[in-house]
Image 1 (cartoon, rainbow, N blue to C red):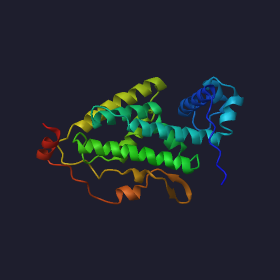
Image 2: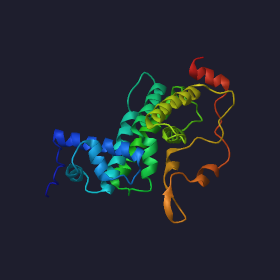
Image 3: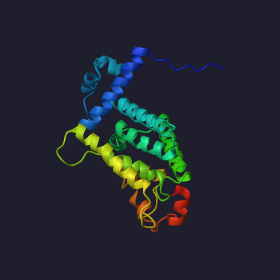
Image 4: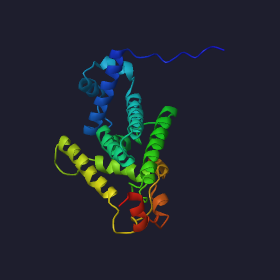
Length: 244
C-alpha cells in the first residue's frame, strides 16, 4: 500500500503570512462585506497579491478558510479552563466578539460551500460550547432555561453593528459593554419562573432551505412551532444550587 503524502508544514514566515491574511480578511469582511477585493486584503495584510494567491487561489477558498479558522478558534475558546464554568462562559463570549464570529459566520452562511473540514470544525465548535453551557448548568451558575443555541445567537446579536452613525471601534467596545450587561442578567435568577419560550438548541441553527433559495440560519417553524417553555427551577432549588 502506498503511503499518503503528509501535509507539508508551512515555514514560519509562510505561516505568519497566512495568519496575517486571514486576520486582514476578517477585518475587511466586517468593513466591506464578502465582495471585498482580494487586492485590498493583501494590502491590509502587508503581503503581495502573489503571496495571497499562493495561499488562497481564489475568493471562495479564502472565505472558506476564514470560516474554518474562526470555528476552530471558537472551539478552542470554549475549552479554556477558568476558575469556574460561568467565568469560562463569560470569557468565551468576549473572545467570540473579538473574533467577529457573530458578524462573519452569518455573512458567509450563504456564500461558501460546506465540506468535511468545515463541517468538522463546526461540529467541534458546537460540542465545545454545549459542554461549556452544560458545565455552567451543573454548577448552578447559569439559568437552566438558557441553552447553547441561546448563547450562540447572543454572540450574533452582540456583534452586529448598531444602526447608528458611530465608528467601528466604538461599536466594538459597545459590544463588549453590552456583553457584560447580558452576563449580569444571566447571573441573576429573575423573579419570573422562566424565560419566554424554550431554550434554543445548537442544531436549530442549521441552515434550512427556504422556497428553493439559499438557506437561512434558523427555521422559525421549528422554534416557534412548539409552544411552551422549559420551567426554571424554583427559588428554593436555586438557593441550593447557588449557595445563597
